[in-house]
Image 1 (cartoon, rainbow, N blue to C red):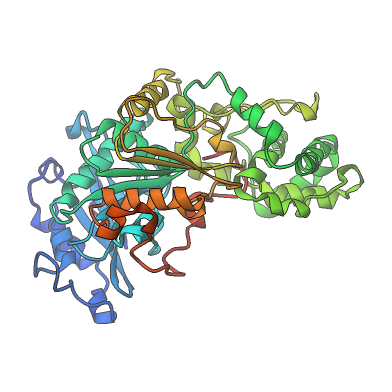
Image 2: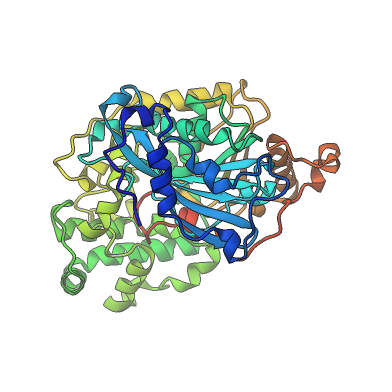
Length: 494
């Protein structure tokens, strides 16, 4: 159902000249309007009587992939024509996927950025539920299918991505004229932060969850300190013991790995060898546990690793880290992340002294996971610039971290220049931490701030933030948020 417009839209369409051909072609791919399937036409409270789908498809460069029904909403999967290089828009375009969960143009809108691929299943981020609003979700550039062909990887950077978001916002703001917030988790929270840094006048607020802030890529001792204290000694000893034992038993476990790779058709050309992929998976084990599990889950880890069977060690590593993670077939989907980690974002490197001299490669750098045909050069000033800007200029920015999440070891911090901005931590929280998990006082303050920034805080909340609650009821289908943060098992990715 994808459009055939890729690569053939004229520059006139890209820079804003209306293309009736593009709009009509987009409409031709549409599913039946949700109104005919029980969702209803545009609300009577909307500012225009024109159907919302027609208004969206009238945007130059916007086309429809499909519409999916959801009670109380209209949900659209769209493509938008973007320049490959925002500094030189005449030098080619690509199609970027967007989803739109439409409620009402009289409601505020949340701009969700996952930092990776966009989900085409209707869902609602926590801020969207809190403000009872619309949600626009954007696929990050260079994650397929939102990738130019051929790909000029030098155009994958945080400014170009922020400029993608800026263009989408400008196009949709004409329809959704109320307040806008931007949000995202992990790399999505980083993305929301970078958008605010480069386009601080676009959004009315930022809600960034578990967003790492690697200011100095060569100094990672904060992670070592984190792993020295996280959880309990008993749990740390269990995890360290299994990880160590996996390297002690490298030979028999790699035989199992060879059989596993053959059975699943896995290859290791990018990392170079099965041995490197095996060790990378094992080295991620402790990190991945704390990223996605809770202290209460430690009972699932073998208590006496030296006495565990090979199968028990294998199963524990595979369940938490995933032995397919560094095969070519899995890595290919994440090439854009590793490219960015190795050029601008930075990546953690931890010592793990409990492994002694069993590691042959240590924590392998992002370069290991990117095909050699793609050139990379690290730019150390980029994250320093963002960090400095947040400390001195944060306005209406909320950061939420998890106490037991390794990615929070290097968080964003606020300086004297920050205004109406907050950093909160969920006790015992992992990489899925949300406002809902904060202690009551902080949860109320954070919720009140989100409502206030969106322009929908009830008078009772304005008078007393302790009364702040989400405006929309929890929806078991829309509000399942684990997938916002969990990519694949294991792998050291935010």
